Amino acid sequence: MSTKSILGFDSLNRTDIIGLLNSQGDDKVTLYDYAEKVKRLTIGSKVFLRGLIEFSNYCEKDCFYCGIHKSGSVDRFCLSDSDILNAVKFAHLNGFGSIALQSGECSTKGFIMKVDSILRECKRLTNNEIGITLSCGEQSMDVYKRWFDSGADRYLLRIESSSESLYRKIHPDNEKHSFKNRLNALENLKSCGYQVGTGVMIGLPFQTVSDLTDDLLFMKQLDIDMCGMGPYIEHHETVLYDYRNELWPLNERLEMTYKMIAILRILMKNINIAATTALQVIDPLARERAISIGANVIMPNITPKGASNNYTLYDNKPLASYYNIDELSALEERLLASGHTIGYFTQGNSLHYLPPVVKPSSHDIHQE
Ligand code: 5AD
Image 1 (cartoon, helix red, strand yellow):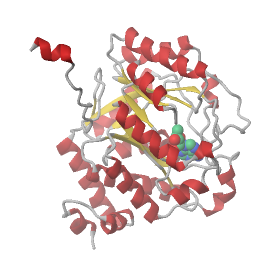
Image 2 (cartoon, helix red, strand yellow; image 1 turned 180 degrees about the vertical axis):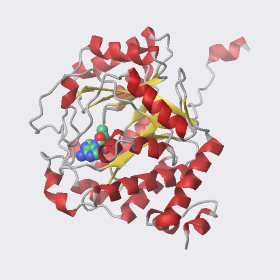
Image 3 (tube, protein in one colour; image 1 turned 180 degrees about the horizontal axis):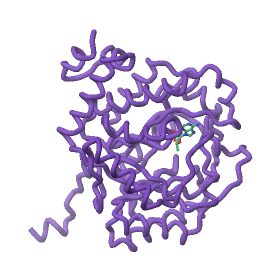
């Protein structure tokens, strides 16, 4: 069936999605155009910025794809509070409505308290104006609650792959890397009241189009508010590097990522979808391309120069530039050329998100 007739349906089923993921040529262009139209009609053409601060590469996990895994040899760093808060001030002053604080996974008391106080300071320094996305891995329900109460608005925890058998192939087989725990963590985040995001890597060894189809259906079923997904890029010091000759070529991983973004936009019309950094490794203009086929969030890396060069999730990761205003203007011009504007000085929350219903307290009832 052609893409045109598939897109005529109101809802896409598994077979439709497989058809769309396999589309080529004009069919693929039709998919991209349709997704972009859906975006403009539902959430409009504004692009929201999240200043990305990769503040620590200490990690307790040993994921087979990731360059900052625990037993890797990368030099470790954790930014000082003042370095982090200076980056936050920079973001706020320049109209980035939100920041994203990202790190390796750490469960020490010191780390939990550090994040907690950074969150409070971020809100205090910006009169509660800055939106905060956290991405610090799996934590206990108590920690998620504490960070939410201290000011985190959103949490991004990628499922990495929604196929349990593939998940097991890309992680060590132990309690620290349990698929069930990751699912639980996502459920816990939802019940705390966060805007919850997840995502997957695209083009992993052993991954099939059928797996990617299930990933999209998983996100729909979980009813996420946001998504960040990107191509898998090999890292020379990981277990999966041994499979580098079996991967889809980089340009196919890139196109498959575009298709995933476009289909997700059609499946979940009003969520936030990020044009992620890994796209840039394959093509320097790939984030802008992703924005023109359904994505609506860009995360310029504003991590201070120096230590952060060691946040090496994969080979050839672009260095942070402690965001350069000239770069921002150039990005803005390219977005304008495709009919997009940047939503400055606004958090750009997910329109899909429904805040938890708070039961009125007896005090409120009394007042009425
Ligand atoms: N290629 C692409 N993305 C990666 N990530 C980690 N390692 C890689 C890699 N080799 C992604 C994971 C993680 C996020 C922070 O970075 O999806 O959740």
